[in-house]
Image 1: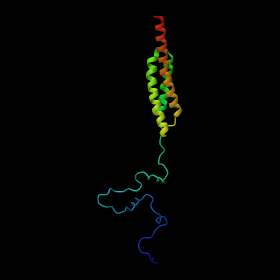
Image 2 (image 1 turned 90 degrees about the vertical axis):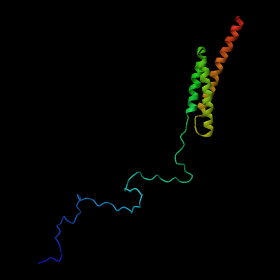
Image 3 (image 1 turned 180 degrees about the horizontal axis):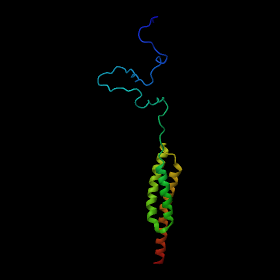
Image 4 (image 1 turned 30 degrees about the vertical axis):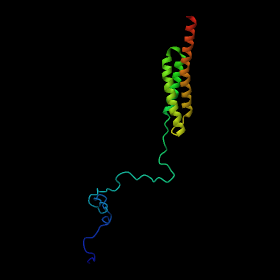
Length: 147
């Protein structure tokens, strides 16, 4: 009894692929001279497309100037209430006015959203500068009446 199939006969387990065999490399597209080799799956996936009328990332608000104006204004106001710290009150009042004006400008341009803090810092800075001036004028008037 001879078999019609040439070659060795296959056993029942030889028809399955060998899981420990070396895998065949993937087929790569033809390369042009001077082009770097392309590896499948290398790098990051592409970013999703940006649709017209839709912004890529929202603008981050910068509320630092309004906050700095409020802090300088409050500390300047406290220094202005205490008579012997009037020099610090004037310096912090000037800084609060500058920071408050810049902060309100940013709010009007839409770059910040703390207009209340900028306004409060501006007002506290002005009051913190005016109080030492009132104290010094009252001291001058008192000294003039005595001498």
